[in-house]
Length: 146
Image 1 (cartoon, one colour):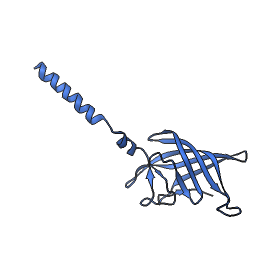
Image 2: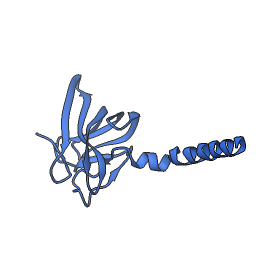
Image 3: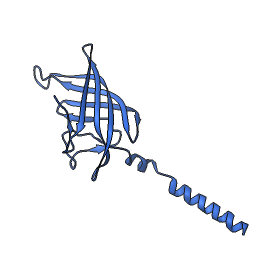
Image 4: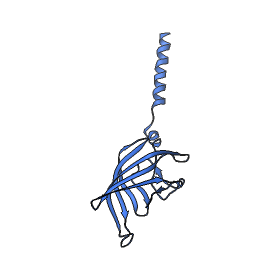
C-alpha cells in the first residue's frame, strides 16, 4: 500500500510539473502586443511583443526601442524618436531625439488577443520637455491629437 501511495505521489508531481511548466514562447505570446505599423488596422497591422520599432505614420516612429520592463499591465522602454517638421520639406525636416515610451491600458481584441491601448512618449528637444499621448483607436491604429 505504501508503494502505491509513493507511486501516485511521484506520478502526480511529474504531471503537475509537466502541466505547470510554460514554454518561453507560449509565455511571450500571452503578453500584450503592440501595433508596430501605426497606419495598419486590426487585420493588416503588425502586432508583436517587445518590438524594437514602432511606426506611427510617415516620418514618425520610435526605433531601437529597448525595454526596462514588459508585463501584463504595462511596458517601459527607451529608444530614438524620429520626428519631422517638414521644413524645408518632409524629407529634409526630420530629426531624431532620445525618448521614453510608456505603454499601458491593456485591452483585448478577438483577433489580436491582449494589447496595450495607450502610449505616453516623452522627449527633450531644444532644452524643452515634450510629451505626447497616443492610443489605439476603433480601427486598430495609433491615434493622437495634433
